[in-house]
Length: 103
Length: 103
Image (cartoon, rainbow over all chains, first blue to last red; front, side):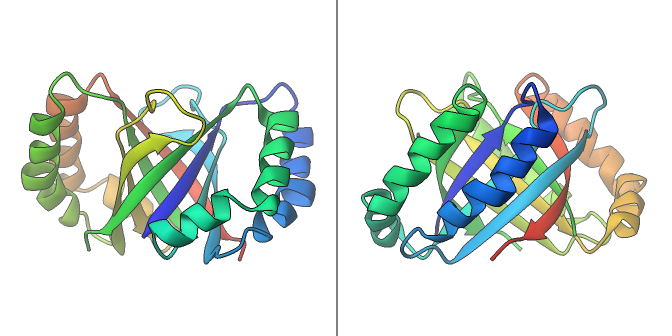
C-alpha cells in the first residue's frame, strides 16, 4: 500500500487552521481519485513531554503505487496542493511511504 | 482510538538502524499489552521534493485512552523506551494522538 502522510506543525492560529482543514481541505482531499481512506490524527501530547512538534498527522491511503500516481496527476490534486500551500505552506511536511503491516 | 506515532529522522547508518528496528525494536513493541496493530511506513520520498525529513513512521494502535495508559505503564514499555533511547535517542519524535476516521 502507498500512503501519503502529512505532518502539520503548530500554526499561528490553531483554531482557524483546524477549521480550514476540516471545512475546506478535507472535502478537497476526498475528491482525490483512488483515495481509499483518509485518517486524521490529532496530536494531544509528545510522549516524552514538552510541546509536540506537530499538531496534526493526516494519512491518505492508496491501494498501490499506480493508483497513487494517478491521484497525484489529477486535477483534484492540483486544487488540493494549491489549497495546502494557501493555508499551511510553511508548516506542512508531506511524506510518500510504503506501508507494511507488521502485526 | 489512541495512536502513538513515532517519526524517525535519518540515522548516520540507515541499514544498521533498519536492522535494529526490525530485529530488536519490533519484537519489543509487539510485547506492549493492549497493542492492537503495529503499522510501519517506510518513507520513499518527500512529496514536494528534496531529502525527506523522516525515514520511517511507525503507528501503534490502541483501542482507547485507558488501554494506552496501561501499555505506557507496563514493564514492556520500560524496556521498549530504553531500547528506543539506545538506538534512536536523537532522531525519534513520538506523538500521542486521537485518531478520527474521516472517510
